[in-house]
Image (tube, rainbow, N blue to C red):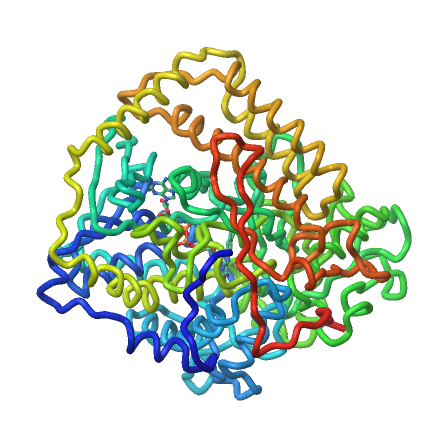
Length: 637
Ligand SMILES: Cc1cc2nc3c(=O)[nH]c(=O)nc-3n(C[C@H](O)[C@H](O)[C@H](O)COP(=O)(O)OP(=O)(O)OC[C@H]3O[C@@H](n4cnc5c(N)ncnc54)[C@H](O)[C@@H]3O)c2cc1C
């Protein structure tokens, strides 16, 4: 049983009391502590900037050439906060409730309440940094709606919210770099987390340009390395997103929680051929005004404009009148799959559903729609060659976000003392399904407002302790391991590229651990994934050398880690004999096809402990206690 270290007291008092009861490090002493932050997306950049501003000595690492290239930049639709600017009944309590319900009652109440509380601070912080959020006619920040909520609480900057927030966090980070409190290491990839006497003491990184591996030591290490959606190969994530940092930490003792909780986003551009390497998201915000439909009849090949109203099935509006097109992502995705599987899909490959703006343009006028979504429409037009102002967009679900990740306690510390994990890389807050616009909120909450408090509590106890020197045998050994691994990849000299194996793996994961899972498929995955990994180790061809820029070498290590993760996902999905949120087990559904939870047996977080035998990882549990929200069958009808 895992101890999440949830503070005692009423839910709305926990964080406040905890902040007061935590130990502080005085300003002069902060200078005595070194903190490593890996990842400079929204979570990492906000954390590194804040810790630097507080006075700690921070080293920040990213494999990108600039923090501004982090995948966070891709976020389009917006960021939630319980400001209630629109006066439509929002509150901290409602955001808390929506998030718990949206996550299908599989998240920790105390964390989610804290997230809802600090959401309001994030918007103030970002606005003060100059983030150009959209404004309403009176000058207040504007809001729009996202799935799973009946209020408008999503702050946005057209379809570039992530980019604008990241520029804000990046500016804060670069200010600290200029002030000398943060040392920034770009193009540096973490290849190992180093521990001494079971405590994190540093990392090993490889310089992606020179190939040189180096050791870095600190009093605490923070991973802010993003999600693992690219295990599916085709996803909406940036091509470089991977699980390596989290996975290698897992191998050093950090438990991996709920790996089978992955999110399929309902509004992506459908794949157009087999060799595509990337899928593109169309922001969920489009569901504010777009209406989703398919033809009523099967295999209807007429162009959308020739299909009259009474031959159209607005299936979400029909099945879920209360939420309509704004049902949460898991519900919208599964329904799109159902109608396509029935033979009612649209587009050349019959693998999409329509997202139609005709009614919105007629109601609000073209100018309004252009102002709201112009850049998204342009992007769609450029990619598909179809003009969405004239014909409906075609959309289909795609893997987009991962709710699973390293297990962390209330203080965001993993099971390895001194090792923290924030942002999408940890498992916290979203349960089995993340609501739209809540990832940016969580990443920035962790980085700006939670970690900077909780890490001090831990460091205060280390006052007077020197960090482990980076020539200590634990570092020397870790460096030697990295060198051996590199040699191994370069010496295989097989016949297939790394990408070949990644694509094959992705197809297995999508088929057996994708939108729907069942026992037979998961058992097949557990046979086929190890077989493919064995072939990968025997037949992969990694060209080039170790002492230069070598993307094939970089990818080999990342894909190897995806293999381990994919197997763990299958184990996790197999063990979880229920459906909840994004984890839909075909055997566990209600008569009308909705997810059927088993609260009696599965109201817990599953956290896996590494053993060198992939099949024998140990499953630990953190029981989820619901004292403030009554568990019920989710209904959006
Ligand atoms: C297309 C798209 C649109 C989205 N839109 C929204 C939205 O509108 N609202 C919302 O709330 N969420 C949205 N999301 C989700 C959200 O963008 C992400 O969850 C969030 O940005 C993740 O931030 P992060 O800081 O945790 O990770 P990232 O932004 O992925 O940053 C990870 C960082 O870690 C570094 N890194 C990773 N591994 C290593 C390593 N081994 N060594 C060194 N550095 C490493 C990377 O260089 C990078 O700096 C969207 C996601 C996608 C895919």
